[in-house]
Image (cartoon, rainbow, N blue to C red):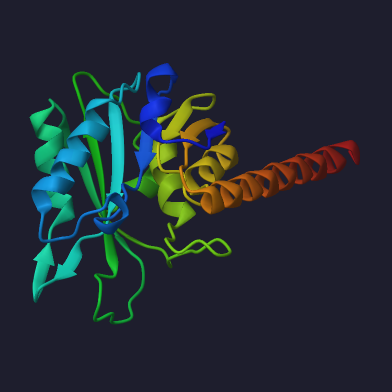
Length: 223
């Protein structure tokens, strides 16, 4: 289920096993890269509210080019997570494109944090430290996330039937990855346009999964 609401209004009532999310950028929370302390305060409030049963949280974040340098959003997340008792368990680099972009880095940091005892499945596809997947955009959504990168994490940190949580569902990539891997999903999206996009995508994923299941049944029935 996805709530059309601010995550702060629903998170305390949710139960979930694992978190995969892409936190919003500076401008989306009403600040800019010159004020990293404001962004870090937002991050602390966000992650401190989370309580996954598996004690695992993955955040995918792209650093920012700003003022002739790089503002390391990934470092802000690492520092924030360590301050609330989480340890960095895995750091993957997702390469979005090999083309040159003068405005923003063409990679994302996929950071997984754990607290206390944690367990992973050691999926073969997860093991490389660098993943190359073209950036994907669903219809009119401006911020793409490669679903294969999300699937790698979901398979590595959860089992079938687990619930994956994303407080910023966007176009529904996390939910789509959960559906494709036989997991459940829950999340929120405050933007009405994006919320509708995520609902459309989830509907398409469920239809596609049902058709795939029917095709398998037809093949079995021929024997």
